[in-house]
Length: 171
Length: 171
DNA sequence: TTTCACCTATCGATCGTTCGATAGATAGGT
DNA sequence: ACCTATCTATCGAACGATCGATAGGTGAAA
View (cartoon, each protein chain N blue to C red):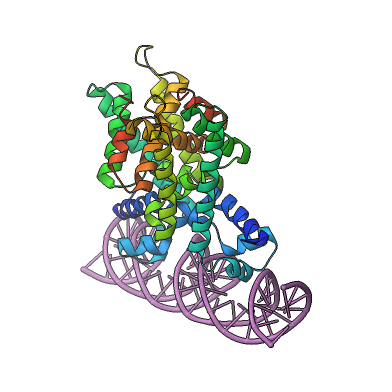
């Protein structure tokens, strides 16, 4: 994967997190990066392929960050909270797969599958390991739902601090 | 507000809940209703005005349904859970204002204001009343976040039962 | 006769996508 | 060292489709 392809994915990720799948275009991405829109197609043949690649990279990065927090000694739920919190407050944007998942019914199949994969991996991680650290199926779903919803609420209200208030009972 | 305008709003509401603000068009709505796209403009001059009207009606309906549940004796949080659950399982769709709020950064101002209003009204209601029934500011935000996130998660995973699992601890 | 709801037709802009051309790098053969 | 072939990354131009929006006309109701 070339540097240019990474920069294209960076721009696409920003745009999708702000506006969703149908809210970004090749021309916008191209303008952000400083190339012709046809050059974006050279790296990613279709819009569906670009969005799927961005979601795949996002999930892998996210999972790696959570594992790093856990290895640093953070309890399971707190690891997730920290990574979500960082993704939200640092970038000032929704979770990519939250943004995609909200319109899941209208997504090309491979993009919907990548969004689904993000949440499946999250639930697997939250339910894995020794019994004293693992969450129940319901606890894991509640945790992810609250984290995603906290982002959505904070964005809709235009107040970033809402995220911390909505998630304060998770730890 | 004429009958035709109501039917147009019905179609727009369905489409926005599935695909977000940038995922619906006048032509699609017109085809659903069975009129020309210019006729939709006759009732709602712009896309922004149509979406804002749909969100306003949605919020008012939602609030009325919650109040009805409360008057029927449902505890505060359970009233919200029931109305959210019905909106999700009956229609098989996201919350309209959740769908809009996810892309709040990319919304025309009046539409973003209507989405914000939905959550402000929700928080006000959850925090109102006698102390033994009212939620704290944090509890109210956590409740709305979990409800919205539960919809998002269930949609992304393609499994409606996820909503009940994610919200099982709210009551 | 004025108003209302709807129509057809059309506008300019933007969409995802495709195409052919071009420049630079790389590799192999002579 | 030189020529040739191939690959990669980029460009401008254009495709048909769709977008939100507008203009002007038609017919029925008030």
